Amino acid sequence: MKAMLLTRPGATLECVELPSPRPGPGEIRLKVLACAVCRTDLHVIDGELPHPKLPLVLGHEIVGRVLEVGEGVTRFRVGDRVGVPWLGGACGTCRYCRRGQENLCESAIFTGYTRDGGFAEETLADARFCFPIPGRYGDAEATPLLCAGLIGWRTYAKAGANLERVGIYGFGAAAHLIAQVAIHQGKRIYAFTRPGDVAAQEFARRLGACWAGGSDEPPPEPLDAALIFAPVGELVPQALRATDKGGTVVCGGIHMSDIPSFPYRWLWEERTLTSVANLTRADGEAFMKLAAEVPLHPAVTCYPLTAANEAIADLRAGRVNGAAVLIP
Image (cartoon, rainbow, N blue to C red):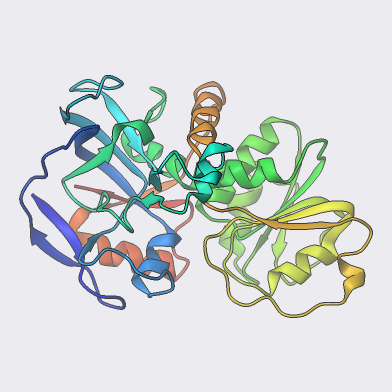
């Protein structure tokens, strides 16, 4: 099978031929139909996430068709269309798993990071950590649901209930999906982009944002919550200043540059600053149920598998509205 392989941090991906994998107990073998490129992939390539499996097939937003099931698999059958997310396994026995926080498992396995992912024609996955894909979505448009959607959903949920005004910093794959969910629920969305990124601001307005501007601008009214998806630590103090009393700022990324110091008065009056780490299967089940009911419109730009390096460069340069998706 053809695969795009990372051999060392900082390297471009190499197109190679690998043997088709065989599923072990509890695993399924998938024909990859589509796989999105995520900013987490950039962090792995750049060496900002330590100790990846090397050589590595990246990719953790996978939509695939089951080709073969391993011993003990009863949840899926050959021919089923399934999604494979970032969380690829958890021990089930550590203190975090026992209290329902498998996203914090000390022995967690991550797709496209500590096990091979979807930048290939085929891949393996633990059947327990895969999800059925709602039928209303095509293969390519379903891919961002599996990380951008799931992480966006967990980030949004961490912001709390009774929200009216929600700010979103970094209007990319996760932001454009969760903005649609929030607007569907009647929230007012304020979109913050890179200063001068008129295209992203217009994209946000088309999706229904009531205001869009640069991240260096204050919103026209205080926010009840701010969701930060851009990996820029300088946005944290800015978001706190834009957030009303009792509001919450949630950092939704897996990596962020250093947060500069800020005066306590920006946090005072019961503002909350928190972060999101990974996802749980419960997150996936809840979000896929929502995605089946709410007509989301993922924006995708498709590339052939062999153009993975081009897709990565476009994502890095901010030339992609929504998600970049590889098609084998």
